[in-house]
Image 1 (cartoon, one colour):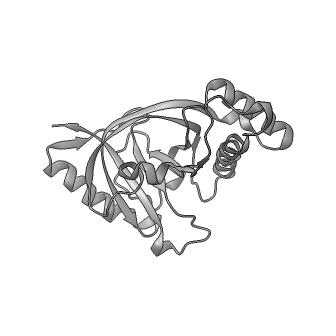
Image 2 (cartoon, helix red, strand yellow; image 1 turned 60 degrees about the vertical axis):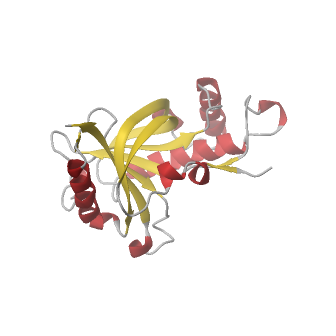
Length: 213
């Protein structure tokens, strides 16, 4: 049986073109970690990402014996995602000199069979195997993003403002406006590993929540 790949099955969510589109994002389940500060220098950011991947891969691989979750199917762990905002300031993609001010939520999507029980068991069991990993910082949450506009950004993260400008122009021309509240914030989905891919080749989905004018 083929391994389920969320990116291939839901191309509208994960593989947009480099031209903006409107999309209604359904409710999805995520493991999330909240944080603040510059992701390039914050030890907590590094820890958050390690915990997210640790739990996500533990749940994926936990398919043998009598501990396999009900409804389990084999799948590719979905990509890392991030929600980013500045307190009291609209996000225009410009982050130079402002990264210390970031509020963020890093997250990885989970299959629907990942219930609260499955998640809590994974935290406890993973902690026994990796006692230095602080799994208590993670939570499981269903997130309904709703109506959004999105675009594929190709290039380094610091070059996102030009892509955000294209996205915002598209939103306005189509009779909408960006409205960021709660978890509906500037949203990035990372389709490449910056440790392995040249900055100019990185692919990042950029998504903004919108409402009608």
